[in-house]
Image (cartoon, rainbow, N blue to C red):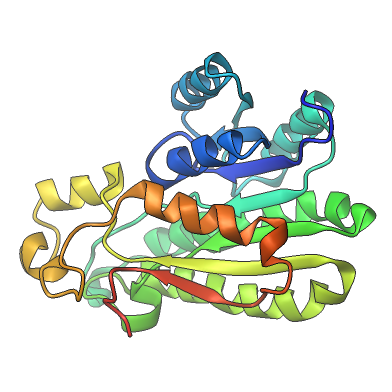
Length: 251
């Protein structure tokens, strides 16, 4: 461990925006817990970060299962010390007409996208409170602000994440912990690529992002850059905010 390095936990860290965030925070000098439900992805990325001279540990857990989250965070603490930064990035998506959404699908999205963030944050929070310093960043979605066809359960879970962000910011600010959200637009990730390849959007993807003021797909690294700011000392007076990184799609 690098002496004095802050310890960051990134969920869904094995690919897409989570991977870019792990790489960026490691470059910023943080010791990073790469948590993913897919073990090989977490192992690969953590090894690459270490090979590049950074500090990283692969962690495997389903964030909707508290005992798995606790075991992963305990392992991270043993390796690097108390957790100072949490990035709740892990999520699953689904494209289904509202009248066809079944309860199992609704519950699963809520369990991972919203309950998972609650479990992870609550489990890591004692470290931040003991230190009197902490950063929580919740990765929401543009659809939570604008709505999205055939994604009522997904956008509802992300809207809940924004509401939780604001409430925790109010509750934890006096204790030295800031809580913010990032709301990505159309970012080129494995998740969005699957949706593009399977024609799951109501119109061609190019038509969606082509209408943005900045008419292109976003890059995972652009989300990571926003995250790096929000978890920095420079953002100490920023809390309860939803930082939209979306090419101006929602203004």
